[in-house]
Each structure stands twice: as structure tokens, then as C-alpha cells.
Amino acid sequence: DTSEHCTLSVTILNPLPCFASAAESRYNSPVDSGPLVFVPTAPSSITMARRVSASSTASSGPTQSLRDIVQESLSNVLQNSTSQLPGDKWIVLVVDPQSLRVISSSIGMYNLMEHHVSIVEDLMKKRAPFRDQAVLYLVEPNEESVSRIIADWTPNKATLKQGPLYGNTAFLYFLGRLPDELFAKIKACKELVKRVKILQEVNLDFLTKEAQAFHFDMGRSPSIYPDLYLSKYQTAENISPMQEQMVQKLVTVCATLNEYPHVRYPDENELCRNL
Image (cartoon, rainbow, N blue to C red; front, side, top):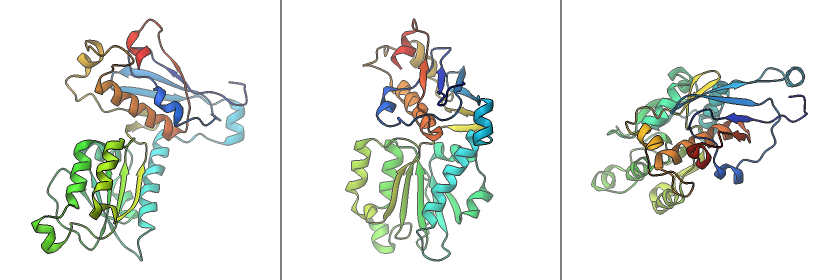
């Protein structure tokens, strides 16, 4: 802790997801703060605590909490979108179930209204048209959410008569990495592409349950324990979709914190080593 550049330390105490090799090519910035220690509490939950040395505290001031960072990231998403609208315009926020939980765990409706969000709509439900307002989609990068976004802009009998649900401006934000095949589907929807002002991965695919803790929100899946401990996916070349999802979620945490961690895990644990 006395070195000029301290490191981020991730300690996996149980067979839980650790940092993936995919991050090596994406996030390689130097670490300039004290190490983080991840202490697993359940297969879908990891608690974070930041340790800052006395010298670094004196020079850089108090450390920003994880919740503060997430709130700032979400505020930037809204600000960057509404700033591109002419005049004092309002915007429709469309979310899927996971992104709604991400938003609810960090900011409230009052904060959204401060950024000119007129209404929050569920992507999975039938929605009323707001043809005089721009739309901001904040969703998980999965097949269902992308397909529903495309359906909003695919011409049909209703839209040919009245036009699309929303105005001529759309902003697309994804909680994590958007797979190439889903990006190709978006590009193929010409009605959507010509209205898109921003398409961005925001790296917020986790919940901030407390100021210094995050949660992967995967405990609702009934197959989480079989997939982790009884699964046939036990090699680095053959991991389960759930394990891959855990890897991707942890990558977004490290990207949000702007940290490139050292990963520690029990060498005898096959699952940890493969993840």
C-alpha cells in the first residue's frame, strides 16, 4: 500500500465468478487508488470494500463511493441525451426489467424528472405513443430487448397510418457489452438507424445495494446452484451461459470503477480457475 500505484485485488473465497480474460483487451488503465477486496457472500452477491492509504487520501481527497459513481454515470447518460434535443424538450425513458432494477437501486424518479424524463415505460409491455417526444432506451444487451426495440420501429399497419410510437430521435444505451450479432440486427433496421443519435455501452450491469457494495441480481434463477456446482461446463473452453453472464457482469463493475484488477482464487478450485 505504500507504493505510488497500488493495485486492485480481487479475492475469490468460494467457487464464484472472477475476472475474465475478455477484460484484458478492453480495460488496461493503471490503477491510482488503494486496492479493492471483493468478499463473496453468495453466488449472486459480492461485497466490495475500498482501502485507501493515508498518503493517497491526503493527496486525492475522499474516495467516491460505488453508488456515487453509478449515479453519476446514469446522470451523464440522461444529460448527454437531453442536451442533444432542441429547446426545453422532455424525453421518454424505456427500460427492461433488469435496467429498471439498476436504476431503482441508485436513483429515484425525482432525479429522472430533473433530467427531463417525462415517463418511464416498460419495454416488455404495450405502450402508449408519445410521437412528440424523443425516446431513450436503457436495456440489457440480450435478444429479447433488442428485438422489442426493433419492433418499435418496424413498419406495420398501425405505424403506416400513425407513424412510430416516438419522435424522430432515439438514444440506445446497453448495460453491458452488445454482441456483434445483435448490433448487426440493429443496423439492419433502417427506420431505427436513421433516428439514432447515440448508441453506447454504459457498463452498469449490476445493482448498487449500498454505497460500497454491488449485487449481480442473479439469485432469482432456480438453476444457479446446479449451473455452478453440478454443471457439465467445467473447462475454460466450455463454460455455461450463466457463468459467462457472471463474467460479463463483473467486467462491467471493473469498467465502472476504472480498475484493472489482479485476480486471486484457490488454485485447487477448477470452477474459479476456469472463470
